[in-house]
Amino acid sequence: MTPPDAFVAAATDTDSGAAAGSGAAQEVLRRVFGYDSFRGDQREIVEHVVAGGDALVLMPTGGGKSLCYQVPALVRPGVGVVISPLIALMQNQVDALSALGVRAGFLNSTQFPDERRTVEAQFVAGELDLLYLAPERLRLESTAQLFDRGKVALFAIDEAHCVSQWGHDFRPDYLGLSMLHERWPDVPRIALTATATAKTSDEIVQRLDLGSARRFVASFDRPNIQYRIEPKNKPDRQLLEFIRTEHAGDAGIVYCLSRNSVEKTAAFLTENGVSAVPYHAGLDNRTRAENQTRFLREEGLVVVATIAFGMGIDKPDVRFVAHLDLPKSVEGYYQETGRAGRDGLPSTAWMVYGLNDVVQQRKMIDSSEGDAAHRRQLQLHLDAMLALCETVSCRRVQLLNYFGQHDQQPCGNCDTCLTPAESWDGTVPAQKLLSTVLRLKRERGQSFGAGHIVDILLGKKNPKVLQHDHHELKVFGIGTDLRDIEWRGVVRQLLAGGLLAVHGDYGVLTLTEASNEVLFDGRQVLLRRERERPTKPARAVKAGKAAAPEMASADLPLFERLREWRAATSKEQGVPAYVVFHDATLREIVARKPTSLAELGSVSGVGENKLAKYGEQVLEVLAGE
Image (cartoon, rainbow, N blue to C red; front, side):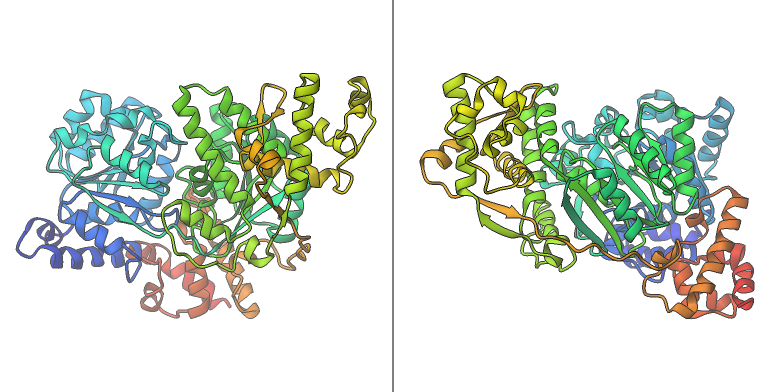
């Protein structure tokens, strides 16, 4: 799809400038991608890059980042070069573009030499619109020489937060990408990420030499995602109940901290009738690739994974993301939950969180590599994550505040808005618990974990308590006004608030400087009390219906027939179903019921290539109604 001469002129004629570039970009958007208008900041970003400007784009997952470089690459003369760390997904990205009629290719270590030579020849001949490659290939002088032989329209640096050395997705090869500006100073660069605080943004600018780039920061709000965090109590069972009652038959991602938890959880779900597969770095390459491909191409599959899974997954109909363990940072949590609902339809970010999560994360920080400054940074990340978990105010407001978007109103669509949590004066219970830790240390020179401290407070004469004569302590039995689970909540929140610390391999509790303020200086401690949440009724719909929650019941059979046609077509072509059409496009087809190719071509998401390829088949399905 070589851009017409008019498109090339729009990028090179400085007198006609932005107006011509805007018209060319709009034409590409409609003709290739099937959309009538840009969203949010997309138009301004596209026009800036088409005109040759550098840009840093912070936009949430599902916000349309890829169009911000794909459209300029089709408008400007030459080939758009996309640097991406996602080798395993490059084929899927190329397949999705090919379905639109865009000439795309990739260069990475998975290819045979003959395949690479073919792609390189296509690049030099100008027979590609977009070329994907991994950052490590830029270390090769042969790659630089290749770019010198061809015409580069722009450099797109995807997942730009990978340049942050202490970030959650650091890739060392990203540190060398400043060479793009040094060697090709006249080629515009656009760096994109779905998650970055102001500090990370500054680091991206510094390390990629983007000092003169315009910054575009879209809203981080994903209003279609409902954020919910619940106390952890038999997490496997909680997860199963959540899926069965709210997301039966839906595609979802479940994140666990360890490989062992991934394997056990995937097996547990499968045994209980939920189609699930594991994904973690300990699996062999073939198994990982197979499971990832199944997730992309099958409908209603659940992947249970470590954070090794998910970046760059362009599956629009993921209806839920669940966390069975506490994420290490708000950035990581936001990036992971953002993989739900890329199509804009209602989705859920659900997490269970408990005392052991806090203990485990503290232990991991204490034993982490790096200097004291690095550990302090990790601690700050964890503190922000704990604050999100323990807040009694709107979770969405807390989340957006973290990314610098202040003055937000409560969303009305998170758990703390829908079922507000109460705060209560926990000063006396806090003093009792801290006194127990203090007395054990002062009187016995001992330190213990949360379970034993709670047993002492509850007056339990179990073997461990009796062995150490802890039933003789003055604090023994002074906490019978609270239940075991309530005391664990007190411990968890004191840890989250820095009023208590955990140390060592056995997770023993110790006091902090702030503990003295509670014990001796009259500091008040407000704690969160969870309200009982009613169990939601199971949805009386078949798998897949959740993708169209507002659809009239009379239209559901037609929607299902279109989905069946799409499934058969995608299987025949060996591509994921969403590469054919997104659910959102099928929903609009059902609502409008076009009777001609012209009418079908006006549906959002139906570009020229897809109309020519699938139009008659879609009309046949509609006529068969």
